[in-house]
Image 1: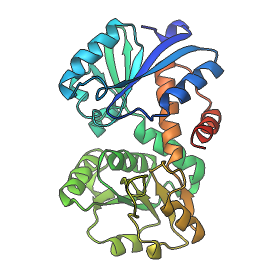
Image 2 (image 1 turned 30 degrees about the vertical axis):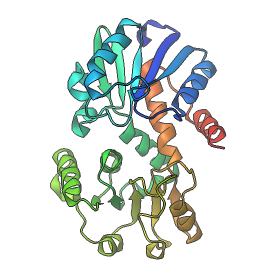
Image 3 (image 1 turned 90 degrees about the vertical axis):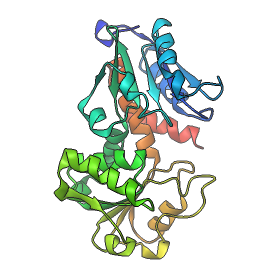
Length: 288
């Protein structure tokens, strides 16, 4: 296992998840490694392919450490399940109760989260003047919690969370309120009412992804003064993003979050800055 502080230039990395055969992460990380003058390999560890489940995570992590891996990314459905297996969590990963990046260092497994920070980086690149806006967040799952955390961490005055599962919305709000206070986050009960008081809206549901047709926000509810963000990036230009753009809204497509969370992970793994513009250009190549 490498220690970035030692000046090493060789890294063995991977991604643990289920059904991840189409992931673009290996190509993105290996290309950035080459561009940065590193010898970096990145492997998919699809537990479905190997007939493994959540119960096998401790053994998988132990083997990766023995095999000399320097770190792994974690994706669905293991971001929460992996937390109790780690030796140390960053404050943000503890707040979120989820980890998407594990660094193996000095015999320890260090849990980090770059989902929220990746969203924040992408947001500030496109909408730097909107960081203090009030936002409506649609979707209270793992992506929603990370987006809400990113919005509040960078200064959103308030985030209202709307989900068809009211219990999920309440749990999301409870987690965010524990970190940012109850005055800045709440459960939204009605889409029209919540939109009327918002300056921006985020779709953090799978709706609009290939295989999940429809829209989380009726297009006739979009106003030209709203900014509209979507975490879906397959397709990169969702129907929601297209409709919002056509109505004169400023838009933040999901590709930005996908790239910037990878930028953050690369920097944790290697201890070196990543070229986010270069990674974004490569991502656009990969998505056609």
